[in-house]
Length: 198
Image (cartoon, rainbow, N blue to C red; front, side):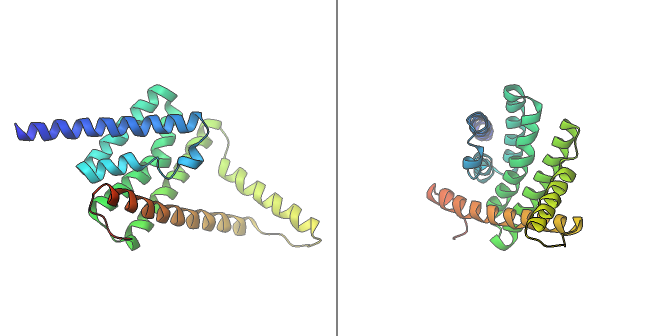
C-alpha cells in the first residue's frame, strides 16, 4: 500500500526530473546557451537527491544519459555525464547530507575537475588528437610570441604553463561550485527545503 505509493511517487519524480534535465541540456546545446545555463543545468539532479535521496539522483543521471543517447548520440550523452552528471551527484549528496560548505565546495570542485579531465580524455580519443598537449603547446607558443613582441628573451617553460593552467582550472572550479552553492541555497530554501544558511 503506502510503501508502493511512495515507490511509485519517487519513480515518477525521478523520471520527470530526468526529462527536465535532459531536455534542458538538449535545448541549451542546440541553441548555444550552455555557457549561460551551466549554473542551472545540474539543478534537477540535485533536486532529485534532496527530495528522494542520493540513489534517486543516480537513477536520474542514468535516465538522462539514456535520453540524451537517443536524442543526441553517445558523445553528447557521455559529455553530459562527465561535465554535469558527476558535479550534480556531488552537489546532491552535499545538500542531502547538509555538509558544511568548507567540505562540500572542495568536494564539488574535485568532481568538476575530474569530469573536465575525463571529458578532455574522451574528446581526445574521439578526435584522435591529444587535446591537452595541444592546449599546452598553443599556450606555450602564444607566450613565446608575446615575449618576443615585448622584446624579452625569456619564455615560460612547459611545466610552468601546465602548472598555471591547472591552477586556473582549480580556481575556476572552486568559484563555480561556490556560486552554485549560493544559488542552490537560495532556490532550495525558497522551495521549502531545509538547507544550510548562506
